[in-house]
Length: 258
Image (tube, rainbow, N blue to C red; front, side):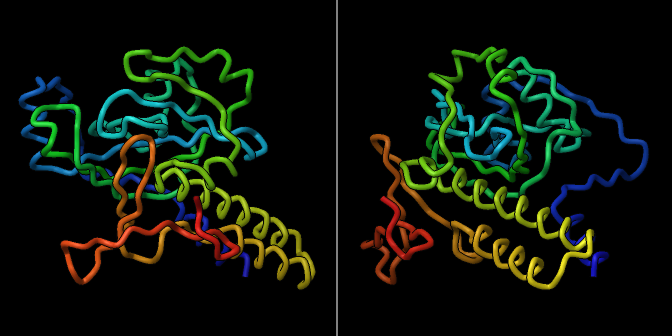
């Protein structure tokens, strides 16, 4: 019943467990030190999918630097001791100059990112992240007050969600949109159950949850892309490693996304 829904909701979090009296010892690493660290570890990052109140638009920044010199989330590396939401709020303060309470950052999911390139030398060594992706609803008035770091971003703008899903954008952005939609649909279902809605309303909401929550990626298999000249090629490794197959994902109608 309703208690099951509440339990499912709690799974869509990134709870922090502290053992002992931890005290952070933050320090700055020079690029050569940081580069060696990147070769030996997977970073924890907090990213933010900024959406309009209606959820019909997302606000993205076109980054200038590796590992993702294209349209991407707001966000960055977490620091020891921070909760994912605290790291997300700090990134928004740093990158947008907006002071947003941590309570407004809602965890969507956790993603694994592996990048061929990075900013630090040697760039070709790449880097890897585990990202807690959050949803943050901002009004256009709030975004109008944002100040962007022009050293990191070439531009920032609102995009219609459907433009992102159908366009040349990284699959992780599309996945976050699907997962955000799924969470909103779940909340609708939860509300109907909590208010003792009839079976027909519950069934309709459950169906909407499944349809709107259809993942962009497929199962546990990694989604691999190559990015060049503003376009993403979806790569499926074939049995012949010298001849990788290129494919594009399909939308809900079974048609390939162009």
